[in-house]
Length: 188
Image 1 (cartoon, helix red, strand yellow):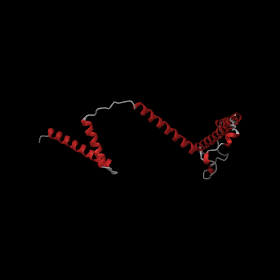
Image 2 (image 1 turned 180 degrees about the vertical axis):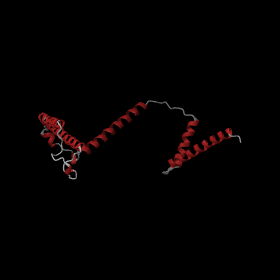
Image 3 (image 1 turned 180 degrees about the horizontal axis):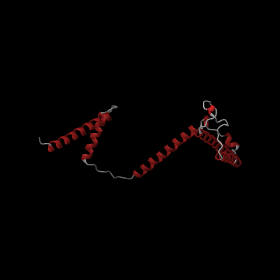
Image 4 (image 1 turned 90 degrees about the vertical axis):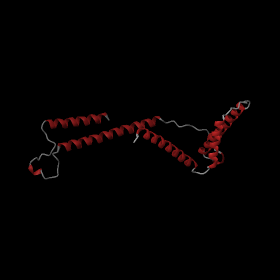
C-alpha cells in the first residue's frame, strides 16, 4: 500500500515538473481552429478541479481498503465460540414459553415479593407504636372541604372545572389589585 502511494506521489511530482518547464496540459494543436471544438479544455481551473476530485476518490478507496483489511484482521482474532454442554442444550422453558416472557414474569414476581416484604417490615415496625398525632380543627376543616369537593364531582372534567374556577378567582383578585392601584395613582 505504501508502494502505491509512493508511485502516485512520483507521478504527480513528475507531471508538476513538466508544467514548470513550460509544457501545457492541452493538446499539441493550439491554433485558432480549436476554439469552437468540444475537445480538451484550456480551463486550468477545471483541469485542477478534476485532478483533485480523482485524487480524493483514490484516497477514499485506499482508506476503504485499509479499513476493510483491518476489520478482517480483527475478525480473524475473535474466534471464540462458547461450548454449551448437552444438559443445557436440552433445557427448555415450561410449556414452550419464550425467554422474554419468562423473564418478564420473573421480574414481576420478584418485584411483588420485594413489595410484600417491605409492607410486612413496615407493619412490624408500626405494630407496637401507639402514637397518634393531634390535628387542629382548621386542618380537619380543610381536609373535609377537599373530600366534599372531590365526592361531589366525580366526572371526567371535575379537575378542569376546579382549575378553571381557580383561574377565575385569581383573575378577579388581580383585577381588584390593578383597579386599586389605578385609583390611587389616577385621581382624575
